Amino acid sequence: MKASEAQIRARLDKPGPDIRLFLLYGPDEAGANDLAARLGRAMGSDAERIDIDGGTLKAAPGRLAEEAASISLFGGARYIRVTGMDDDATEAARLLLDAPVAGNPVVAVGGTLKGTGRLLKLLLAAPGAMAHACYVPDARNASQLAAGIARENGLRLVGGAAERLATLSGGDRAVLAREIEKLSTYLDAAPDRPREAGLIALDAIGADLGEAEMFSAIESVVEGRTAEIGVELARLDQAGVSAIPLLRQLVRRLMSLAEMRGDIDRGLSPDEVVKKHRVFFREEASTKSALRRWNAATLARAIDRAREAERAMTRAGGNAGDVMAAEALTTLTRAAARSR
Image 1 (cartoon, rainbow, N blue to C red):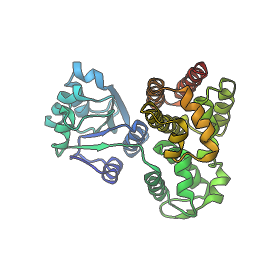
Image 2 (cartoon, rainbow, N blue to C red):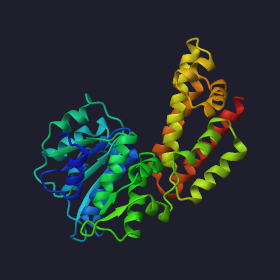
Image 3 (tube, helix red, strand yellow):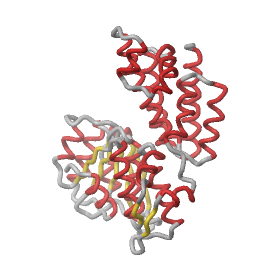
Image 4 (cartoon, rainbow, N blue to C red):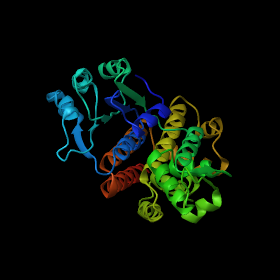
């Protein structure tokens, strides 16, 4: 069955035998992984987790049902987490849903799946499955998401705090959750002892690195400032900011340039383009410079590279993900420098 975000959160937090498979898919892989982690917290820190790659299920479709029906080695709670689930795992999902016994819940994360694909057709029609599409929130939705996560942690965000957190995170659920957990701990908040949190509290925990402060790092990439990108990345790392919001804002900047570049390729002048797209007057010169440096093909490749870096960072996590992101950002900066 199809599930809203509120529905999927509620069931991941309180799994029951009626739902055997939770599928989280869509372009927001970081958000999908953050939602998937809720099942692990609900099962408890002592629960046994079985990890399966989606590609494995193509060759061995019966394994998912077998793991779901198996008893933990130590007799405790057990659950299965599948990564990279796609249409090739449709038969595995079918066997799980049709199995006579399946006591261990399964949470699966997939990428962008077609609504007409075999897997989604099966799961959306199955009462024993829940499927939820994860999309990167826009500014308004990110603020609402921040407020929702805050409520779960006993906080009521006031005075622009939700908007600040949305900007800080770039819409990334995991980053939002970390900052809100820090804020909740600082204010000693909990659902049974709610607290208000405003900008002063955010400043106190250091949650003050927003879009404006990421601007120089993004422009270092776009303008090919190879001597500066390392310093900018080190500054963001020292502030404890995940590279995911930086990568997402970079993609937005590149996509904006790609749209403007398309107008230039259709015959408009750079001056006409910056006026048409209402570029802030202080950014007109840098935008026109970027449009001379990047063409449609290089912008498309850069967008793909930045998105792949975000996906790789989500999969790898920790220090490995940060290294991958830094390598991708540095590579893009060098590519821009060669285009001068």
